Length: 257
Image (cartoon, rainbow, N blue to C red; front, side):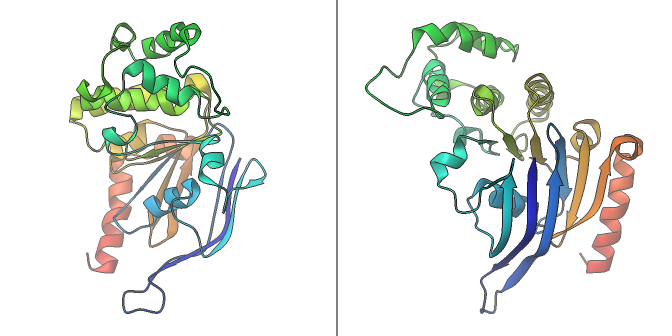
């Protein structure tokens, strides 16, 4: 499904601030896997996400999605295949547009634009059914301006928008971090439901160890551009938060943090 092969990435090369992050980094994610990625700041998890999304270009290596090289692909072509939900709820929606307008925009991302109406009334019932999945009553507020919604509601809307046209890959960039604990739990439960129902291959970066333990099919822990834990199946099921904390604390002691 997704293969990162021989990824190299150095920031600020040739300067006093040079930082070698990835050296021959490799990762395979199978179809329909839901992978949670944890690790300290600077471990490489967010940069890995940015390399997949195209916002950061690797110095070397390949990014293969279903056999297609994604490195160097134009943004609009990549956006047709990769959905992303950001940490900031305001980044995934247009605050000045209605819920209906936001969904229509997301619905058209894989289509060619022409002289047709942006709002298709024939699709409105479909949008309503998608919003009903959230259980927030947003299906009855289609004409509400997105900027007036709460952070949790906007993030839930962003999740539906990112998956409205089923992507080959869904990237979740600490998408619950900016929410209060109750809203974060609701959005995480919705994420799990949407990913399972739509059978979407997903990669989630999170600082919440509980989410990494409770959700997904696989958990990675990263450190200094490498993978130090790769737990799936029975191994993942048997790991607790304390198991991950133990490794994290060992790394912190070794590095003097």
